[in-house]
Amino acid sequence: MARDRWPRPLLHFAPPQGFMNDPNGLVYHRGRYHLFYQHNPYAPVWGHMSWGHAVGPSLLDWEDRPVALPEQPDYMVFSGSAVVDRDNTAGFGADALVAVYTAHYRDDREAQCLAYSLDGGERWTFYEGNPVLVDGERPHVRDPQVFRYEPGGYWVMAVARADDRQVAFYASDDLKRWELLSTFGPAGCWQEAPHWECPALLELPVDGSDRTHWLLKVDVDGGAPTGGSGAQYFTGYFDGVRFVPDDPPETVRWVEAGPDFYAAQAFNHMPDGRRVWLGWMNNWRYANALPTYPWRGMLTIPRALSMVEVKGRHHLVQRPCRECYARMQPVEAPQTGRSFPLPEAGLLRLRMRTGGPWHVRFFTGTTPGVVVGYDTENRRLFLDRRAAGRTDFSPDFPGRFEALLPPDAPEELDLEILFDLYSLEVFAPQARLVLSALVFPAPGDCAVVIHDEGETIREVLLCGYADASASA
Ligand code: FRU
Image (tube, rainbow, N blue to C red; front, side):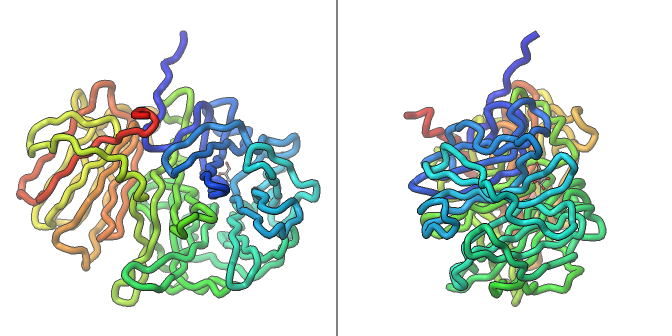
């Protein structure tokens, strides 16, 4: 019997078919954004890892392209990044797109390799001198993040020594010969985490100043507070050689309060200098069991990154990229206590007071739906997907997730909740909080209801997403 095809999300990237995990090689080049991703083109389960590919004129419109870096006879092509080699430092050609990825060999060893494209990402050549970096005897070293360190005029690679729970920093003049600069870790959540993966070292603007500060994000494939895999971060300073953290090594900080955010990476060479990342909206605990077909796995919305300094301490702030707002069209605002139709994808903006409890049910109808709300007594925002549509495909999927508002959060807080087929992302930038969660509503469960017992919701704006390609 033919299985029903699940439509892809509207605002979020998902592959046409097969499995996807990490975003890879995010880069802007010659007027186009490139999105590569860990992909099994043959089946909607992890395996045969290759780099899938999509390109687009904006951060939201993606056109599927053929697989860019297919699995090789002796290895799978694991995660990595892409850079534009404007000055031809590697000798492949001026303006070459160079992918730096991990080869995961059949015997389980890993090493870093290069591939390049001279035609803007369509055709790729594996470099004949591969691998370019083998990190001693360590078998599991992966997920190179490469960027141009302008003050030094060299390339920097951050790469995860997975079993050691360390990030190693390397430098190169030509992307081919790499010299060890320093290492960082173990630190943060390392006792609970079996492996470190997917490092991202980023210099970010500090809101309300002309300063920058550095972020080092490292994913852990177990031991996250929401269960399973998650992303932790450190703030500090990178001096071209080492990352000097602000906090003592035992300090643990998480990028997300939700269960579904992993392996994020930022676009290289953004035309306007913004730092924008996207993550894999998933969790290794159930990634291979999600009910969608014939594709499985999707990304978060692209998020603009900055830091805020509060009482001398720097914190990460994430906001939906500004491109999404331009596509949002207001629809009739739901009145409290009444059921309203929810557009397929869009944004619910709320101004809440921290004085009293409220909650919103999304995707409700035949099932209670997903509840997003505020628990006054415990000062916590929460998201509860236990009674929403399909949850039975994995015992690890149902759950209630919560986040404590920081003491300095304003009394009136603006929340932006992005919804799409199969997901909710709750942004509270003034509280430096994001909760992202997958959700698989029951067919026909497409209403939203706001409950406001303490009359603490001040303003409500509900918008539907107007897909550019649909209106064209
Ligand atoms: C993270 C990860 C990476 C690896 C890739 C393999 O989700 O495990 O460490 O490169 O996925 O698909």
